[in-house]
Each structure stands twice: as structure tokens, then as C-alpha cells.
Image 1: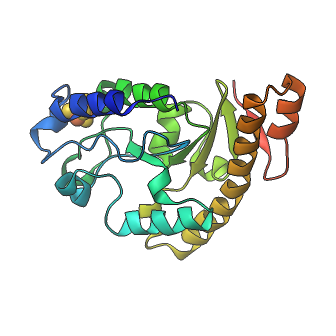
Image 2: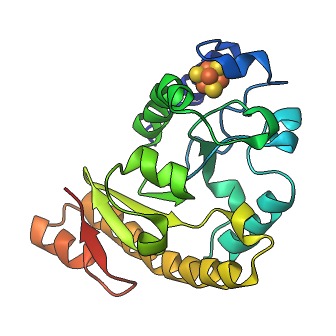
Length: 218
Ligand code: SF4
């Protein structure tokens, strides 16, 4: 475990008190993130919506229920992963976050990733993709792919909210989640081998194991 409960609570407290961008003026409450400090998988969305703003937790409501069921299809229990957003306060009327807001909030996400050192980061939607892998490409091309950057594995996926009312997108998201199951198995095996002192060549073999292609970025 990399993060400690104290470190995570301290960071969540900073987010809840934050007034660094105009979104603090219209929020009910900030939504730092939710999940156990032991999480090896992180999911990153765009921003809190109305329900999240009210409850203080990410991905509640219909999109959250769809996310839960998609995670289960990938063999993941939602209670085992850490879920957050690129901006921690709800933009008014659920508009896209402004670049100045993303910039002001970006260090919190960086700190969360540094705390958890997750094996895999699921990028939920184009905003999360653009924030964490700028210049990598669009979500329509990269969804479902396993991308490695700075020794970390990222998987861009369509945002569950976009799939709620688009059956075709939902099928694509479900198919991508089935690929995620293989990626997670590979990441788990790689971590176990690292713990056992595997050689670099063995780790490369694990990273290239079945479960989907992997692209190296930058
Ligand atoms: S969105 Fe981020 S930077 Fe803006 S007030 Fe909320 S926590 Fe602070």
C-alpha cells in the first residue's frame, strides 16, 4: 500500500476547503474522490454532476449505476477501486469544465495518482483522456486500448453518462470493459512478479501477454 488513510483524508480535506477556482462559488460541496486507500485501480471522470454535488460522492445516480455494472462485468467490485474526477466541483448546469478550472484543479488529481500509484487508470471520457494523456489522440480512436505512459497503464473508455441513452455506445463500452478484465489480470501478474523480483525481460513479457494490445506513448 502506498497511500495512508491520513494522507488521503488530508488531501480530501484540502479539496473540500478549496476556493482556487470559480466553481467553489456554485457548488454545494466539493467531491474529492471515493474508495479505499488500498485501491490498485483508479477511475477518473470529468466532473461531479447534480447528484454528486449533493451527496459529495463521485458517480452516484444513473451513470454511477451503469459504471458499477460495467465494473462488475470486468470482474471489479466498485468498492475496491478509487473513483474521482479531473475537477472536484460541479460546473453550473453540468457544462464542460473550463480550461482554467481544469488547470486550477489539476494538482489534486496528480497528488491522488502519486498517493495511490495505481496499476491501471481508467479514463472515463474525452476530458479525462485529454487531461492525463494530452496529445495521445481522441476517445473514438483510443477507447478500449491499453496505453502505457510514464510506467503507468491507462485505458480510455467512453463516459458512462454518454452511454446511458446511446445503445451502440453502451455495447462498445461493455466490450471495452471485457478487455479491461484482461489488462487487470496482466497488471496483477506484473505486480506479483515485481514483488517476487522478476527480471525486466519477464516483466515485458507479462505486459505483452494476451488481453489486448498495448501502445507505448511518447
Ligand atoms: S474545482 Fe478544484 S480548483 Fe476549483 S474550487 Fe473545486 S477543488 Fe478547488
